[in-house]
Image 1 (cartoon, rainbow, N blue to C red):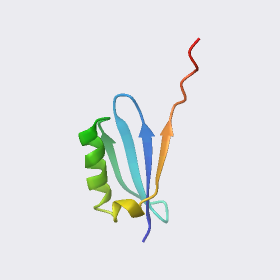
Image 2: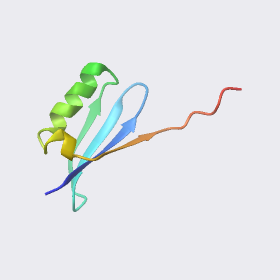
Image 3: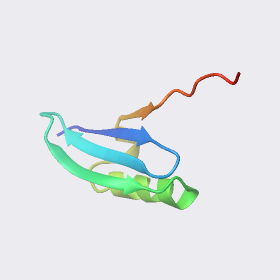
Length: 67
């Protein structure tokens, strides 16, 4: 069964949601925006499938250009 991850990229805490091919939510987790936090994300994805086999869609708020 395929797994997919959505990552809401933020400045204080990233929010991750892992779903299967039917859209069922398998896991939701907060990830600190640090090197260790991102390493932990890879570790958590490995529980679902080989991390390189899990497509990740990153969402982030666009910042307005500097004035």
